[in-house]
Amino acid sequence: MTTTATELPALALKPSEDRRPVELALTRSIADNHSPETFLWISIHRPDGGVNVRYAWTDGGTDLGDRIDLLALAAPLDAADWLEITGRHVQVSHRGRIEILAHPLRPILANVQAGVRAPEDRRAGVQRVLDKAAELCGQPHLHSTAIPRWLGVGPDLINRRT
Image (cartoon, rainbow, N blue to C red; front, side, top):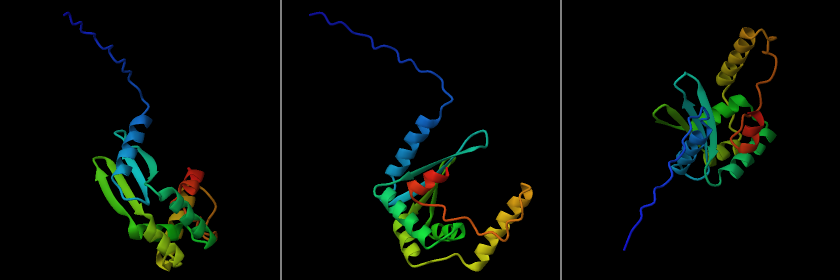
């Protein structure tokens, strides 16, 4: 009996500057390791000093995040409230140069439903940052304007602003 070995064709790998496929696979891998109903903010720090940000939601997170955003906008909560509420529950971890901010959505929903608001000192701090940014960019003084709206924890609102 004669056996013939067949050579497998060599894979044609081509160098690419496109990081998206690797970042998407990485984002999926990170999401697979988190609890359901979680919003993930993933910052991938590049060697050139830049950062690529990816958002992901674990099972049940997209619908719950969008529901939270609708309630928050109806309240109406703003960016200072978003900082306060998401900051209370964020879980920070790292994978090398990758920073992962995991936001469990059920506690965020509970805070939004309870009407939690940023304290006045935090609200004033956010306003000072906005005023300084406007000054540095040569924009009109913003102190009399409202703090921007709730930033979002669901894909509908997050994807609307990116």
